[in-house]
Image (cartoon, rainbow, N blue to C red; front, side, top):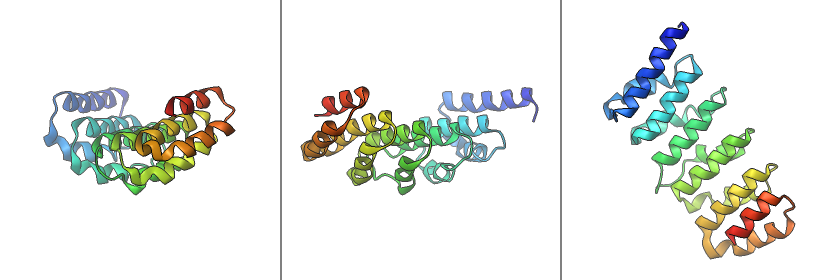
Length: 173
């Protein structure tokens, strides 16, 4: 596929998304398997924005895509699609992704979903190697766990040395 054809394909997917064409599920799912990562990324984003529940399984299958942007958009879309439902075990696994941004998206998606079953995995993120992930996790743990998590958050605050994470923990308390 040359650059012109690729641009045309991505624009067509974006148009489908802007028009809110929920009947395009098959086309968008097929685009998740396209050889070009930009097409896969656009399809993942569109599926989340359109709110098509049947897209959850195909999106989960793209969580391990080798191109960084794809799992990032997939995680974001799953957060939108699963909001108010139980989180997917695959989404919880994304909290372990080597990419810091993917882990942050997984934390944010867990918060949007509001699934308290994800709390143990989120508590583990309070000691993540990334101060950004730790900060986002603190806010999410406080939001999902409420007053039950104050002791855990206070202990993390007392041990934390990074300014951003401390500020997040302080705000969470």
